[in-house]
Image (cartoon, rainbow, N blue to C red; front, side, top):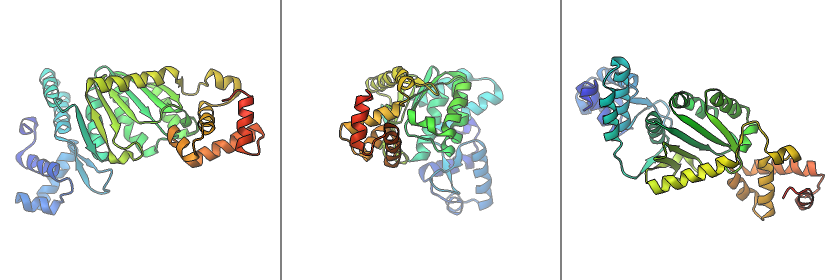
Length: 314
């Protein structure tokens, strides 16, 4: 199959070996395949050029193979660009390759990134994303730029960030860049879990919300995807555009995050528990509370709670 898409026998053998064992090195590949190390290195360069291998995000200085499905799609898309023909055959190939199980576990950042690229490359209607946390690492933003730019050119794109990102210049700048290209961007304190939904048919969620690097679960069960889509729409309805205050914020100068935090602490949650609900650290919780106590003229959190209730903030 890969031979029909332009890979010679050695390239197929190297790619297959790395799919079976991503940690295999040049020397071991040469020994297994009976080739010189120089030939193996040339073949690796060719596979990198074809985007079938990419630098690993987990093991610096090493290469990681994209999945077989992703590799086939990349080669098909390359031929489409070069030949400007065969689009119907390529679509049929992608459809056949997409006949997977209703749920798939993706272990590690490399596997998640590879599958994410496949899903978004095949999007035909809409991509929905929820991004928790008070800031997105700059490296992650830059790694997503080309993908996000491609998606918004082809389909409707909507992104929900946690309201706390308003205080992070890098994330705000990236969100505005998205908006300039047509992505609909809103913020809400209710964004506490990472989520991606493509075309209302496939959803991707973290295996462990507290450890994103552990991997993700790719779900295609219609009932579950529908429930996750309903959750997104519920939060989207109450969210506000980036930079716009809610009516309550405009009236009281109290942000949505501040209000949500006050309510959680009033309910008896600890700083750690409240921070997890909001997708921020306990340190950020303490900083926000110190600022609120200062604004309320309170000497203690108890006094702050009494004054917040008096002002109608709870």
